[in-house]
Structure formats: structure tokens, C-alpha cells
Image 1 (cartoon, rainbow, N blue to C red):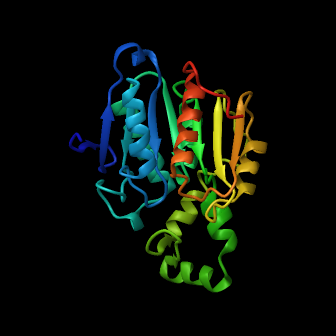
Image 2: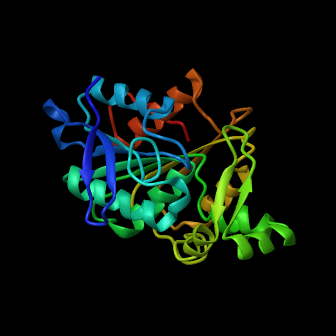
Length: 260
């Protein structure tokens, strides 16, 4: 495997990344950009699997770590949605040219929507996996108890348990910054094909969230695929195959089955 490379951003943050350039006829095809979830890194199963799938087809592929994640600079507790949006914009602008196809997992789904809103002229399509738009407001803040809200105000942070790793440290800055990047309160126009994948056994992102996004967005070609009993990881062989299918369909690759 190629060595990790690093991008020094104008923000002062240093982002770790892996970039596979397109080859052959695929040079005219959008570059896939994998956007990971909260506290995930670019070495996750979905990112690495999709990279191998893309390289086998000559497709360009970018995966990277947000600041405070993986091999990138900074501490997770110092970051927020806006910082990671800036990281995403910096990586895309510096490391890719032409059209892109973001593939966003969980928080990365929110980042993919922010990216599509910020630079729609370059986003040729979107694929989301258990997308979690606005989760700082609708998931965290809406469910905080009064004691937790008081702790957030007094200490500037609270700790929340996770089904998948050590507790999440949620800061006051993350909550307040999240309110500046909500996508489900104002019109969300997606002028590109969008495929959303969601497991019904996901305990981190509900099917209601997926349906809310589907109902809220203005998009001429948007489909939601619910997968019975799939969890938030969405990384078993059957789920990985569905991700491949969704990406192939959005790219218009020959032989891509209809998952709608």
C-alpha cells in the first residue's frame, strides 16, 4: 500500500490522505471522494474496500482524515462540523480536478451535502451511507437532559457513550457551530443524482432521518435504499456490494443494476 501523504492547509491544519489517480478511459469519469464518519478514519472497511473497487476500474479515488481524526493534525475535541467542512473543501480543491462523486458515511453524509451545497458545479452525484445531517442539533442537543445541558454550559463539554468506541466528547463549540451548518431547515437543492443507503437496524442513525432527508431535498433523481437488519457499520459483504452498485449507478457504468 502506498505511503500516507499530507496536505498542509491554509487553516494551519495538516491532513493525511491517499489519492489514486484515474487511468485510461476513466480519466473523464468523476473522482470518488470518500467522506468518513465522526471519529472514523480513512482506514475503515468501507473506504479501503471502495478504493480497491475504484482502482480495479481505473477510477480516481481520494480518502483522507479530517483534522482530529486518524493521522491528521489536531485533537478531536478541538474540532467541529465547520472545521471538517473546511478540511473537505481544502482536500477536494487541492487534490482533485474536474467532477467529483462524494461518498459520505454517517457524519460524512452531512459533509457530502455541505460539499454539494458549497460547490454544486463540481459534484456530479452523491452516495450517502447512513447519512446523519444535522445530528448535532437533532441527535445530541435535542436529546440532552437538563443536567447535560447545564454541564455543557459549565464545563464546555459532555461525554456520551458510543456503541462502537470510547465515549464521544461533545463540546459546546460543536453544538453551536453545528447550527451554522444545518441542511434540513432551509431549501436543499441537489441538482445531481443521489443514492442513499440506510440500514433498518442502525441504532446511531434512524430510518426516520433517512426519510426526512429524502422528503426535504429537492432532487430530480434521488432514491433511498433501506436494508433490513443492516446496522450502522454497513460494512458486511452484502452492504459493501450495495455501495458498489450505488456508485456504479450514479456514474452510469455499464451493467450497473437498478437498486431503486
